[in-house]
Image (cartoon, rainbow, N blue to C red):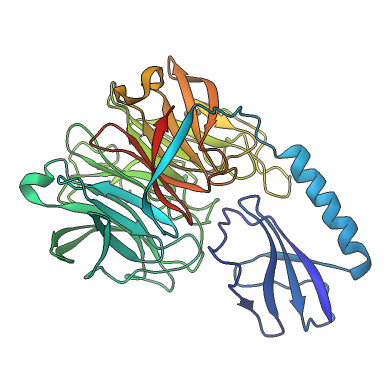
Length: 433
């Protein structure tokens, strides 16, 4: 017997790169038939089902059994709803093109430029790649990478004094520590030939969990040499983000050697995680340093609606999930308020959600009057969102690289050009016509 199912309300779901992945329970096998990426909605074919009308998997997905007679009607209604209610209205700027710099990458989660102009690139699947003179070399010696859902090998950056000390920093999902599953870790190491050396784990979020969503994680050094990093709330919306005694749903700050800065906002708070710099976050996958003000800017995924841009301040509460401009993926509310005393409101939010990933300011004369604009990748709508700013407000948005693919990461290179990591394509150079 063949039945059809709708996956509803998959909070923070990010699909696998290939539709060949198979899920199993004790009665049947699921094969993806349609992928509504980042809408929190998928359709599957399902074989050998028992007479139960619904099942629950370990990932807590809800499946609704549709009869053969109703499935086409229901599918049409879903498509109409998506096409009419979840369309992005940002105009397309056609004054841009691109050049492929690194081809044949799957999910390039992060990359950074070495002093000689070569790149270190992280593939979410767990590969660290050195790209130099058109050749890819796989770097060995990484710690064990926990691959589950959105977890894997994540961001990578250089120490500001890399030429002198050789340290690079990366974030990844790790199964080390208490409990089954994994959580986000931050490490640093040095590169020697095609192998990393001097590996040091600087931070590991606890406890582990088998949930596959909301690992974060981006890394940034500020102008004073502090290391900032983000960790998502790991699917524990009502437990982690508002509790400073728990990891996850936070922006953190460390010294470059992993020690806790003496002026971190919660160093004197009993039982608090001393590395926390701000809290009340959902899943920040973009973070960058403003080139003029030197403030830390982040963006984070909302649920259905409510993706946000924030400027991070020490000790501040950014509200998740108490305040939000979003709703649950199935349309129900989890909060009725968008502001509350003692909580920071976003300087910008998206509705519908664009599923943001990667973030960088244009700080270069290579792009004329685009200089100073903010760039944010869209996973859902597959473009580079160029945000024009005035007084820390987004006053205009335009699509660049429209339809090229899911934009995962963005960096400005040492040559002043913007480089963009795009899933199932590679790393491209943005060119203004």
